[in-house]
Structure formats: structure tokens, C-alpha cells
Amino acid sequence: MPEPSQERLMKDAIRILNNPFWINGLEAGEVYRRLHDDHDGTYTGILSVLIGPDGDCHMWTDSQPNQSLRFRVPILGGGMSPRVRNALMILALAIKLDNDDHPQQLEGNLE
Image (cartoon, rainbow, N blue to C red; front, side, top):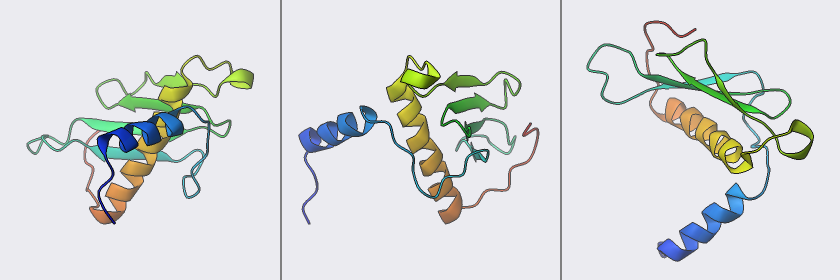
């Protein structure tokens, strides 16, 4: 199969971002965490994504663990950034897949 063109990738990305969805295999209430690549043994710089039971997506880092940013489902949830919410859903899947392929030992503050 040939590699998709940049034009095709852009169309696919826009199509995905413009349509609300739920990804099978992601669990509501589970926090998907990934340590960034350049922590140099400090184990700081953890990105966290949570999908709420209502479909809203929350994200935060370990540098501000008590300040999550919430991106709500549009229409009933009042979300003003539906594409960001969809991107966070994809980010949660990416974290899950990377954690499956390359598990990390996360140390430090995860709360």
C-alpha cells in the first residue's frame, strides 16, 4: 500500500477532528500518563489525559497536578473546543498504545 499523501493526511485529520467520537478500548475514568522523552532521570514532565464518564477530556502535567484543563463534549456539554476534545481522545489512545509497546516506570508525583 502506498504512503498517503500530505493532502490525504490533512483531509483525514480534519474529518476526524470535526466529528465527535469515542474510541473503543479507552476507559472512562482511567488516567493515561506518559513521561516525556528528555527527563534525564528526573522523572518529571508527565502528561496526563483523563476521559470523563460524560465524554469530556481533561489534561494536566505533573508541574500543575491540581489544575486540569477540561474540554467538554459539544452541544449538551457546552464544549467550545470540540476539535481539541477529539485531539485529546486521540492523544489518550496514543499514550495507551505507547505504554503497551514501551512501558515506562513512572516515578515521582503522579497525583
